[in-house]
Length: 80
Image (cartoon, rainbow, N blue to C red; front, side, top):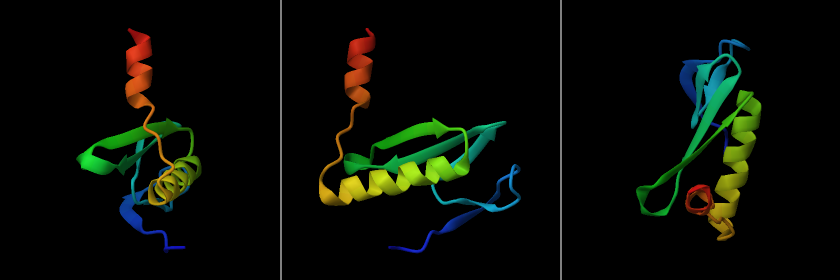
């Protein structure tokens, strides 16, 4: 497994650097972002940096294995 690269930004809740791809958005809100094919980005918000990093790891693995399915477009279609 690759080493987890951290960003220069510090998590105010723990005092530790945030994992790469995770940003703090306010009290109890951490957004994980991942670039997929075609330069498009997917993102999801979590209550902790740890959960956001776990989602990034899982999504990255699915992308590498060809098992990732972007359901964002489906959710938008069903919402209207």
